Image (cartoon, rainbow, N blue to C red; front, top):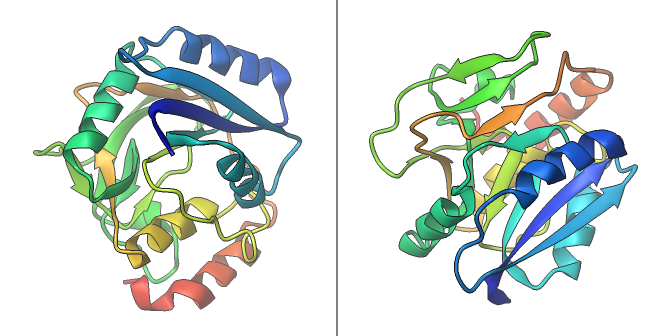
Length: 221
């Protein structure tokens, strides 16, 4: 593992949208001594499989898995991320939104204990989502949103179970916890990302929700 390298990993189905995301990534300040790499996985709806393929092909210690429609606004995002990971070796994965509990229905965003901030367009227009305040460097949670998931630990994604665009992120959060690492939501002074996702297409969602409940029932509630 190269602890002076950062790799951005994205599953790409819309090249134009991905190019816009890359524009923001290439504008970020690069921490001194670090190099940046990019891996794109074309036409992959199987997020877990795509992420596994990219993870295995990169020697970067620090990997940032993000959607093609995520635009990072904070110019010192990478500096802050590396500093967070170096100070907290037990933190396996961190994101910008998540939940401290997962309800028994498996839907993390229906938890009463939501944390994080992000600009989102899931309602059809971009507006800031802000949840409970975080008092420390990060809030320990059980699930983070897959819009952006940064890691300093390589752990296989459950592509044996989740072969679509749903629940791969909640699954990976719990797999990190099962492996003995912490999962966190970053303390942001202002949202550092835009998630220009639009209104979600939920075809197949129910199938993966049931799979998730079957595999992780003991972590719910």
